Each structure stands twice: as structure tokens, then as C-alpha cells.
Image 1 (cartoon, rainbow, N blue to C red):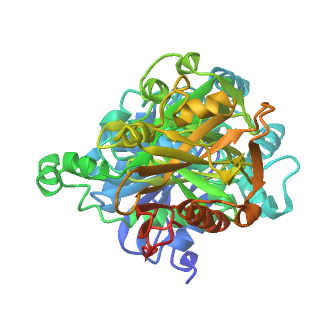
Image 2 (cartoon, rainbow, N blue to C red):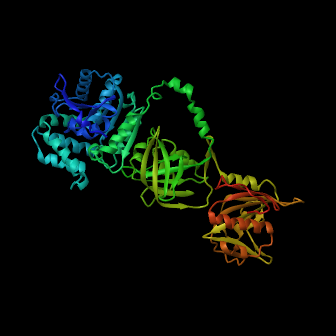
Length: 599
């Protein structure tokens, strides 16, 4: 890439505004922050001038520009930018602003949307929390309009660290030089406005008519990710990007990364975004799209974290999936418009709780705007501190690996630090309604009064058998039944004090001619019984093939169970006791097996 500084030129507008201009293409106006000047953008100018006409302005009171009024408003700085654009004959530009410059960019886009194509707000402030607002106010009050070397040193420490890391010393020196060269009175007047203007756009951002990127660093405490996320949620065409490990001066400390995100955003095709709502409606039916997506059967999760004030936060989501085994990564999505988006977009950790079929009420509460969602559930802090809900089928306690912006949602990618799971029945969701797989157990097992219903129950690699005079049998009964029906499966388990959790269907078959009985077997788990019943045997999985099992169909089924345990991929056998097919569940692409093997 050629050095843009070779053809960059300095200029002065009729009102005394200083600027730097370089390159050719779509025009982009760069507005620096308090204490800087147009030259602070040199890395971005060098990287962008091959594709854009880049103009970097000296803000009022900075560089070569005149002082602002004694008590300025954001409009004074936005009007200065408009005058420069008029002088240069530019009708419409994209605007990139940093910190105070980001507020000016927003003011410009809100006051003169016809002059702005897109805006990028880097490290912008928005509704500072009370303690931060007070600290900024105190710094503003302390400004005297005179040079302050000690104040400069504190600012550099706040922006880059104390001591400054070796790899950031050049960036820190460049920043310190700019602070040392600024007019002290211009700095003081502008900083006092900066200290009180963080809420000026709170009611106006919903009217922002242009695409807007709000980008900050994950370690920027003064222009925090929560602030950028909140602004992006309010702006109709807003999005939020957080650069990992970066602080307030990321445009200087990480110029390549910052410039790449700016260029990618400014280079997007805006044709679709400029279509009217009516045109979009005619071309794409969002309602039908949502219904089509709803045809995919999913589980239901509650995603939890701890908020900035130490309060538990959570929302219901079915957009959950695994990403990677090594490293262990999972993801879940949250809408920009969700009330909890700013909290989760800036969280250091979160937990994903997979709900069981009895947690529909909790799902509804966490999908609502209820004031205290956690009053209805039991929970414990997980390894990262995020709430892990009692009774969940599984939980994944994660550190935030990455936040990815995608349309009107953010993708939270988590690195799993801890997890738990059990064999309870999960809660499903499809076509706008809950689906409870456990209900299908009852329905299937009750189809015929004489149905033989059994279970392969596992605990720690051991299978529960009942030893009889004829050999070994799996627990089974006439129908699923209840604990009070001693002939049913549940009655048998209750009589032997076996606490079992039935899971997924494993095999269904009818006896070959003459058809006399239907057999239904489930997979599940059990708690080791305290019963002294000597008929109960716990057999290691790899020892099953050596057992004496009279029924060949059961032997075949157990042989399949052993094989599928070894690859953790289970199917469902459907047929009779002579031939049938295995319909894979965990491996959808696997072919069915048309043999007499019940495995």
C-alpha cells in the first residue's frame, strides 16, 4: 500500500478550520476526540486513501482551528463540519468520529441527515453511570485553561495503562504529543461540554436515519461496550462491535484492525438499506420467514449472567448450538432490541441452561418483561459466577469468547468452562408451541394394553439387570403404567426402589407371526438403588455380551446398544423380532440397516 501522507495536503477553510485531505473516492470525514487533532488519524488516512477521499478536521479549539464559544454545544462543532463540507463542495459524506468526535458525528447525522451517508462512532460515551459521570465532572471542574503536564500523564495512564506496555509506547507517545500541543483553553471548553453531553442524544437516536456502527474496545471503561450496545439498540440501523482487549485509543493502538472494521462498514452496499418498508415487504415476507424458521424443532434454553450491579439476568432462547469440541465452544443469539442486550453484549461470562419438559413456566417468565424473573426458579452460581438453574437437563457455564454482530442479533460465542447434564426429558419448541418428548412415551406405551414396555438403564457405565432362574432380564412390565400398578414398568421399578429417568425411545417391534405383543424399549438412567433385593444386578457395558439372555431379540437389541454407546450415536429400531430398520438420530446421514439385528 502506498503511503497516503505522500499526497495528503493540509488546508484551511475560510472560517479558519484546519483539515487534512488525501485520496480519492467516496468522501469520509474523520473527527478526532478531545485533546487530539487531525493528524492523529494519519494511520487511518494511510490505509483508507486508496479507496476513499479522506478529510480529517481539526475540531474547534484544536489543531489550527479557532476556539469554540465559551459555553459551546454539540451543534457548534457539527456546524463547523458542515461549513467545511460546503467549502470543499461535498454534498454527502460518511462520518467517523472518535470519543467527543463521535458525539459530533451523531449530532451532524441527526441535524443534517441529507448530508450523511453512514456514521461510525468509535469509543463513544452514552449515559455514564453515576460514579463515572462524577469522575469526569471533577476532571472538567479542575481544568484551568493552562497547560497541565500532570493531567496529561494521568490521561495517558488511563488510556494505555500504568506503566504503558512496551508494544503501546509509540502510540502513547503520539497521543501525549497531541495532548501537549492542544490549546489549553480550547481543550477546557471542549472537555466541559464532553463531560455533560453524554445523554444529549438519548431521545434522538431512535430517529437516526442512517446506518450506524458503534464500536469500542472491550477494556474501555470510560466508553464501555455497554454504552455502544445501548446506542446500537436505539438506532434503527445501528450495530455494535467490540474489539477484544482494546482500550479507548484503539484507533492509535490498533490502527489496522480499527481501519479494517471502518472500511468494511463504509463499503457495504446500501441499496437494500435504502429500500422503503413497502418495497421490502413486497420482496420478502418477514412473517412467512419467521414461520418457516419455526418449522425447525429446537430445544429451549434460558441464558443467564450477572449484571453490572451484581444482579442475575436472563432471557429465553432457542437459538443455541455447539460450535467446536476443541476448544469447547457453544453459541446463542440475542436480539439487539432485547432489554438485556447491553448486559449480555458486555458480559465476561454467561451460562446456557437447557430446560426440561416441566420448565415451560420458567421459559415463559424469562421470555417476558417480568421484573424479577429469578424469583420463580432455584439457581446456584456456576464456576464463572453465572446462574445455573436447578432442574435443567444440561447447563454450560461459559466465558465470553467472542461477540459477533449479525443483522438484528448479536451472537454470543462462549468457551465452556464447566457443564452438567442428566437424562431428564428436554423441552422442545416448534411452530410456536412447546413440544414435550415425554408425552410421546405415555402415548406410545399406552397404545395397546398388553404392550411390553422395558428400559435399558445406565449409571456410570453399568446397566441395570434383573437376575432370574432363566438368566438376565431388563426391567420391563405391561405398559408404562404408574408406581401403584405392580404389573407395569413403573410399578416394577417402584417395588424395587429403583429411581429411574426414562429418556429417548430405543426400539419398537412386534413379535413375528403370529403377532402377539408389541415391545417398546427406552434408554434412560437410574440412581443406584439402596434396595437389598438380590435380584438386582449392575453389569458393566462391556460384559453384557457374556450374559445369559434367553430372548434373542433382547440380545440383539443390547448388542446394538453396546455398539452405539462406543460412538455415542443412537438410533431407533422399528420392525419385528425378525427384521426391521434402525433409524439413526445422532447421525442423520447414516444409512438405515435392513436386517434382523435389533441393533
